[in-house]
Amino acid sequence: MSAFLIANMAPIIFASLVVFLLMGYPVAFSLAANGIIFGLIGIELGMLPPELFRALPERVYGVMSNETLLAIPFFTFMGLILERSGMAEDLLDTIGQLFGPIRGGLAYAVVLVGAMLAATTGVVAASVISMGLISLPIMLRYGYDRRLASGVIAASGTLAQIIPPSLVLIIMADQLGKSVGDMYKGAFIPGFILAGLYLAYILGITVIKPKWAPALPPEARVFREPSGRSGATSLLILTAISTAAAVYFALNYNTESPLDETIVSSMSLGIGIAFAAAVINRVTKMNLLSRMAEKVTFVLIPPLALIFLVLGTIFLGIATPTEGGAMGAGGALIMALAKKRLSWKLLRQAMDSTAKLTTFVVFILVGARVFSLTFYAVDGHLWVEHLLQGLPGGQIGFLIVVNILVFVLAFFLDFFELSFIVVPLLGPVAEKLGIDPIWFGVLLAVNMQTSFMHPPFGFALFYLRSVAPFSPYKDVQTGKMTEPVTTGQIYWGAVPFVLIQIVMVGLLIAFPQLVTSGLDKQQTGDTSNVQIMSTEDDAKAEEKSLSQEQDKPADGAAPAGDAEDPAKALEQAMKQNKDAAPEDDDPAKALERAMKK
Image 1 (cartoon, rainbow, N blue to C red):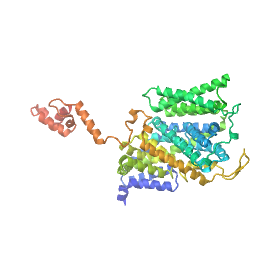
Image 2 (cartoon, rainbow, N blue to C red):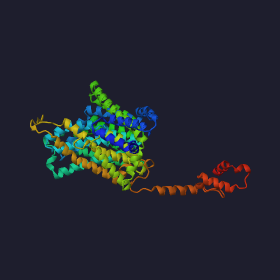
Image 3 (cartoon, one colour):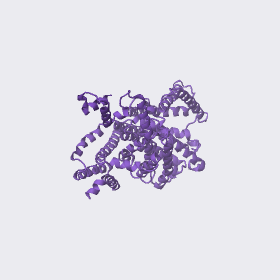
Image 4 (cartoon, rainbow, N blue to C red):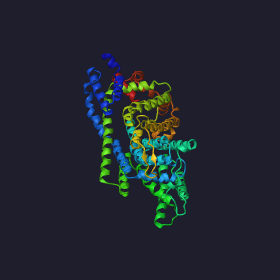
């Protein structure tokens, strides 16, 4: 029995952890208990030294002193303040009116607002609950299909998982040992492409099933000029001017700058032009802009300014992610104060929720450190590496198996648990296979996003279920009885968006440049195609050839390659020094002289 335990300790520890989790024990305590129990067993069997657990205090202290994790409470606090400051309500109301006259307009508005909330809050729960409370009753009022409405709200809320400043990207960067700023840069483009895929799906629904997503009726459109027009033309002209200025700036910007820096700088210029025009129009009362153009500009500018304050300063290298989070939290407090919604009650609720979430993360990380101490001591990481490196298909085979594994585990674990348990085991294997860690981290983050959407355990579905109507209710505006949203409708509405997220995973595997194009070349190397990389033998041969050209030995001297071998060096030294002085017959001196040559 002892021999069996010693030979299979690593898989037994991993299987035991799975059993503990399936039994419903908290993740942090399951990890820590497995690490301590099997560490004691290993010491009893003589596998591990008794001094093993002396390293625990230092590992726990390392968690507490990790400056990267300081960004988590800052971004969480910022998101909670913004959620209670009414920003989501203003955005949904304004953008809903903007897109209301077209089919699916409210659904488009939810996706766009979800992307903006993701870029400011980074908290899935805040986004889903806010949009569920505000937009779901309006969508039901005007005849939207319940499955489509539920799916759009839940999926748009989960954009906070992938669009910076996402909390999962902070954890991913910490576990992979990479910069949070680089992880944000890598996820910037894929996050908005995913939002674009959601919009494309809504467009397809409006073509195939137009009754599922009707336009707002004329009486529901509140933006009207004295002439009776909507004022959309003025907004289009202002948008065209701002966009043209941003594009011109981007085309003439420093060509050596990363793509994300160019995008942020050009967008900031375009937004600044639009805001200046709206301010001038209001101050001078020239009436050059319509009510809609002015309203949209003043509603969109504060969150966009906050996005630049956080992400812009990070991408431009002005601030670290932790400093960006601190500035974002300060900006959120200023926005809430400007709207006269900042109170001691709101502040205390936000601080309590932030403390709970941060404590939850730290406890899981402490448990993971205790587990990894024992797991690595019994060479569990080598067992995982041999298991995954032996997969057929090389990099592509590894990526397919890993993504299927993460997708299945996401049915039972959330992204915090996946990040702390699975990613530390997969990261080293991916690096040995020549896979860029930033690209791999973004790929896993997109895959983990499905953990919020998986029926029946997806947290986004639970958040939406908590705010969706359980029973028939009377609409406050129309006075009509409205049917409730069933749990089955929420689940079926999420399925198409889970499939879209899987498609996004495939796109990232097929086109890694979606991630790497936003990074500096010297940071990522040439990772434009994960399927075409130089083999290890070619790299070694090239390095050897280069060293031979640069360090050709002088006549009579030992070749550089041979001099590195002590036995060969000694043999050559003895041959070259047959007539040397007697004291040179000492093999040690001969070896020393040969190494100098």
